[in-house]
Length: 138
Image (cartoon, rainbow, N blue to C red):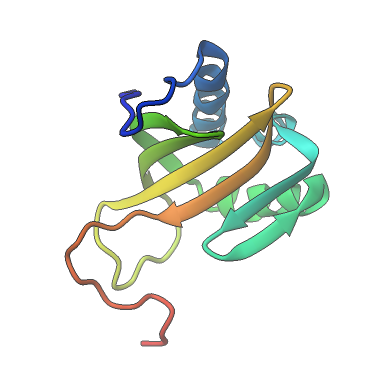
């Protein structure tokens, strides 16, 4: 993983990198229990503007949309921006991606506390090339 940073702040710590690596490993292996164990009980996941609050909602999201859709991540770089660790990754899986660029790239914004994920934002990462608005119906 490339852990370069655009900011002049500190690089991610070994502990932060290990937690992100554990998330990627468990995602790629489809290990629901291992994924769930990485989150704090009151964590928040925001996946493309949809909120999942607390471990029960997060577990259901993990089961349905991560493990259930066989998501795989190929990390391109990891950097730290203030309190967030941002992993940019190519994402694939058994989900529909009509009208989206391929390979599809996401930024995973992790906020960590006490060796747990307390916030995870999943955002489509796009470059400057114009793409269709994914929020509109085809």
